[in-house]
Amino acid sequence: MPDIAPSPALLRFAQRQSRIAREVERRAEARHFLAEPVVVQPVDSELNPLGSPQAGVTRDISPSGIGLIVEERIEYDLAAISLNVDGEGVLLLVEFRWRRPMEPFEYVGGRVLRELDHLP
Image (cartoon, rainbow, N blue to C red; front, side, top):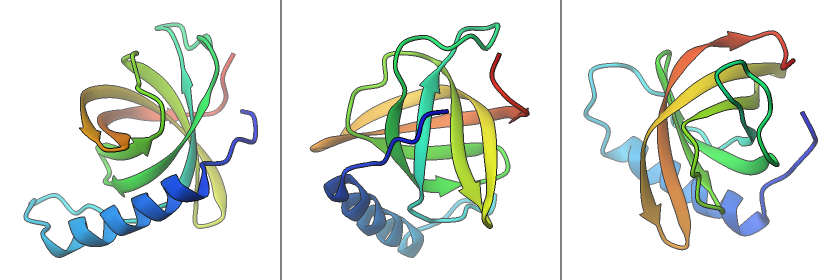
């Protein structure tokens, strides 16, 4: 995946949103609230890249899902998400389930389908 970084404004916004969400958490499943840069690559059902990747920032992550804040609207349902976890590069296949404006950005949530070794 290409090395794409989120804008400083997006990173600051996501860090603030992650702190706020941590304070009001009520879910039974443990979520980790952290603002980490990610690369979002849209893919088809065969995992072939579609279009250009975009930068995003995590808001929260759990074993089964991920919340991202992105600058550009996500119009697709399936993506490979590249992120670092404890210094290790991880590639996740995510199915986006919902989207909502979080002005001036967009907040999207998805179900983690599985970890990927690589993209074709």
